[in-house]
Image (cartoon, rainbow over all chains, first blue to last red; front, side, top):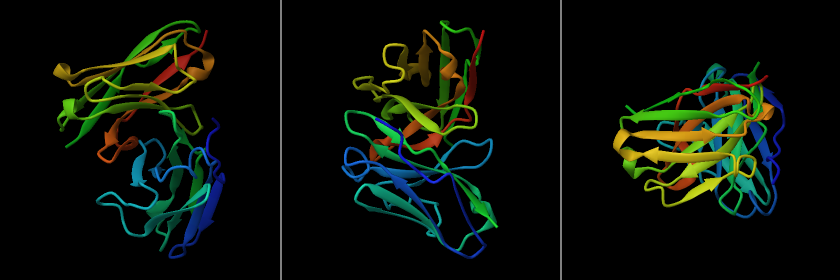
Length: 110
Length: 120
């Protein structure tokens, strides 16, 4: 199975909203509600931001939201802040005890 | 505080072997499944392997199946990854990551990573 497809970059000004897409297939993103999103700052370990498509773990600001339509999942960051500048990775259960990540999207806060 | 600390990375020759360790603290290790995830330099994340809390279920990505072996020692709060037949493309930072309570395919705590370089 191939990695999930994300745009390499996204950007927005402080206070604006940005949406990052993650496209898979009916065998992964479209087949299960097991999509998660991770934030990674340079030189740091990834951090779980969203699981089960749209659920935030405790401590994650409600500015972060997730959704899914068909084979495409999305992460929306509202009210952009400087500290949101990071790489974002989507992830999906791929069936047959396999996990797939997207290639990552570099979010720039202008 | 949950802590995961990887070790064992370094330089290995193609065809060689390395054994990574992940020492955990701050939670009851024997209650949690664990994963290994890697990141090649400047690249994205790649899930490698999962082991259930009791070692009863073990899964591997196709890219490492037959070459890498995941294991754990609950008495020593440690997770391991034995890597054999190493290839240049195995060069990466290797992270251990704890599974989240709602699914083994979510990773809620990560170590800082250990760098493995495969080169002659």
